[in-house]
Image (cartoon, rainbow, N blue to C red; front, top):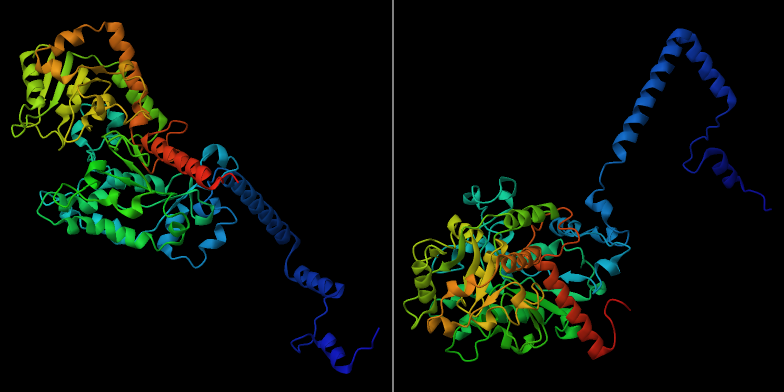
Length: 516
């Protein structure tokens, strides 16, 4: 061993900072003990020791009883991989990331088609639209309609119509609010990821329906109507994950019918969003799809019931199941005098003529979309509800009717066929009645057709409708634990899109973007 130099000996003796090293010996402890003994009596020392031990025991008991039930914080729930990624992240993004459920060991059971990355779009494509809600529709303000994550105002006027314990689950939800609802739900989706490289699919939270709505009802040019959607595509095509797939693993939700985004000529209605070249591979959820487009998935129109738990779903199902119904059928709608041979006028006239069997709600006299409890009451009080086509072939009222346990009566095959099989039985005759509209025009009595169903038939069909209630509802997004094993309309729609994206990737690339 080499001998220490003088300088190194000094460092060893004095320490690295040049201060004399202090050596603690047994003599120090003995000296300290004698000092305490000379200043503190035995009794004082004994009492101090007892108090110290008592306080220590209390501390141990307190921590044992409080630590176990305390839930982990949002940050604690993050996986070790994700936790460091929050360092240096802006506070608003941190709070958003903490909402994301943690990855679980059973991810492949929970998220069998992979995980979803949600783009953080420039605010002009979503948040700014909500902030400028008074400008969304030239006819009236939409601020109430877009509130509460798209659910709208609480339906306080239904307090005497629905069970008191479920009144908080009812809202006056606008039929075109789906884009906001889906954005709120996917932000806390169990299969969301903050790591784009681990995503099987990418969600684009663009409020396309809201963005174009103000251009649809006034004399804007085709270029002006297309501008919001073109701006979005101009932004998204510059994103690296879009470039990687040309949008084939991207999807969004359209809160309006597909037909509002399929303008073929400049002079026609709507925008040409879905016909733009960059949309040729992107999947979309919509309240009414084009039957010939494999990229589209229909989802139920948003209705008013938004449960927080499976218990609330069960309570509502039992309520509509046990409801005593005083009318054979009902029609909720208004005449359209500007339409030649208006079929709704024919239905309303038949209902008035059969007033002992039919309960009519004339939407020309009753504000059906603005908080009238008479609409829900009519559906709750009737075995059947008449459902003609709406402005397009489908109609929001179909879902209002079924949520109340009433059996829908259709007059157009396309009102239900080919649209909502994911949510309803693929055998429509098991839960609905079909009467061709031409038969009604030729004098067929709707009352006589419906009276041909026995009470057992009605009970069986109603049970089918009641079973579908969770599948055609949109659960409250902040629900802790959600609907458990029950899947709502959001879960079913998003899972179907993910399934198609994964299948599409296997066909075209031979790889599985998640299970590989």
